[in-house]
Length: 449
Ligand SMILES: *Cc1c(COP(=O)(O)O)cnc(C)c1O
Image (cartoon, rainbow, N blue to C red; front, side, top):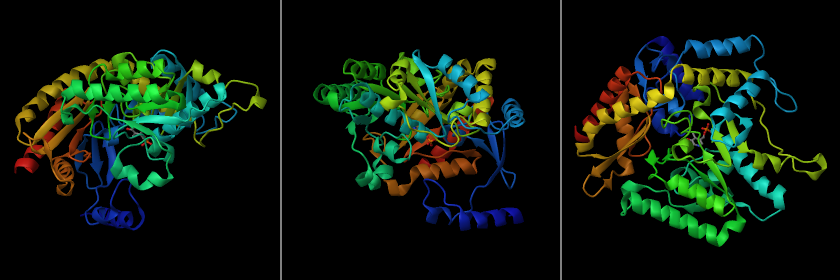
């Protein structure tokens, strides 16, 4: 072990508190310390290469150290690194807003910037709440979310979150949300149809009983990410959106994970031609380079805030780095690469290739289900395939499998017993082939070895 590694590892242990990490476990092991990235690989300070098999937690799009993206940032840096959007504008945030409106579902014409998925969600929630307040002073103040939902880690986002392991401890300080079941076909006795029916029925009866006190529904469209990459049965999102519209409840799509091509369409809502009232984007917006997020709104939402100042309808919300020019510049360059490289088409064909490669895993004794939409893939491991009995959480089957993948040269991070494979969209077929080989080998070695 090199001297500089030892020094960095010791300092890391002394001073850095890592997110979503039990530090007692973490500090018992030698930390992975990344020094640089190139294409779809990351290199640690000891020079070892790893495939970025989870896009650095679902962010990266075009790979690392991409000349066009680097150039966009240095060009902007020659002009100005940051200036505020409070009462003034800057060039990249204007141009990016135009682009976002162009590629988003029809009708989303206004862009409110922030700096992370969670803040984008906070903004959507507050906008929905104040929309009803401004519009009619109505008592519409609660939210509907879905079982096992994840929308970020700030208090508002946690209030519409429903993953007990992350959220339960904070329950006393949260606002209450209505929770309808997410259609989890693999673990529903009625399969996809039964799961979908249960969701729609629950939503319908909730709306029929209480729509006049409900401001909005928030959903991770088509793919529920943090719960284990769970894919909705076809038509479910569309039906949910229609029900909300019918009952005058706003529809918020949290596209933070699914946006920017992950599912094979620019946005997951496009898969079922859904236009939300509010849409949150983050993660892949800057190609995975810088922290920029945005909340898009329809003209209808915007116009409820557009009034004489003394009517007190202003949206009093903002963040220091709202509309950061460096971040917006790299987001623009990323969107340009989507077009130049025909990336969406590429994702669709690479998704087919990846599905074929992974099909061989289906017959393994501990592979319960392989779920996939585009290049978002989750593989649920089970102790008993017939009964679908789960591994006990203490067995840490997901963690051990991901550790094995790292030994074999690929980074990923599990969600409980689900192995996540979300490669950068620009991965070549050859790279995807090698990554899926590592994935399969680590699953087989850990569950059967
Ligand atoms: C990651 C994620 C968030 C939170 O985004 P941050 O940038 O980590 O705050 C919100 N919603 C979904 C669906 C996500 O996957």
